[in-house]
Length: 193
Image 1 (cartoon, rainbow, N blue to C red):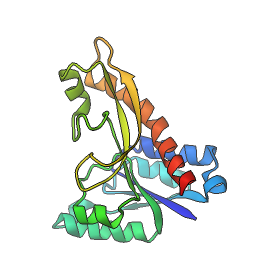
Image 2: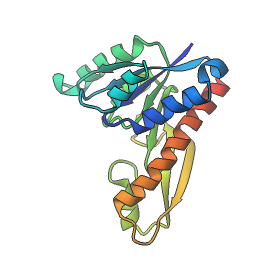
Image 3: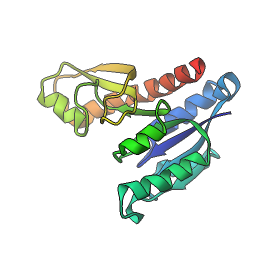
């Protein structure tokens, strides 16, 4: 079985989109793959409730309980590795990972970023796109490397920037596309594995 472990920090809408796609598209039957666990660095992450309701193992590894990033990541890696992941999927996981952690899961660690990378890595992407006068914005699924938001691109979606857009209205349109392209990129990887 190809186990997928999803890391979240909040509501988990991308995680939920992946879980729903996995069931709807029968990833277990087609690819021998399943979402095995959802892990959050925050105990109050709403996505944990959804995961538990779906019968998916849901765990918390609280980054605030650790004195260093490395200590947090050691516990996180231990939790991930219990599920023997084929893929580790970052879905709104709001922690920057060390090069050592990224290397541990090299080639198996995915992220979605709310911009058309390589444009606007990091935070506040929608406002930065608006401030730059962009005509289009979007989202990117990419493999994670040690350089923040610079790994190989797996899939992108483009949305127009509309007159009167705010960072929030643009974010809402981009998120709709994220929910489509992230499951699709994961399914493509599973199919080719």
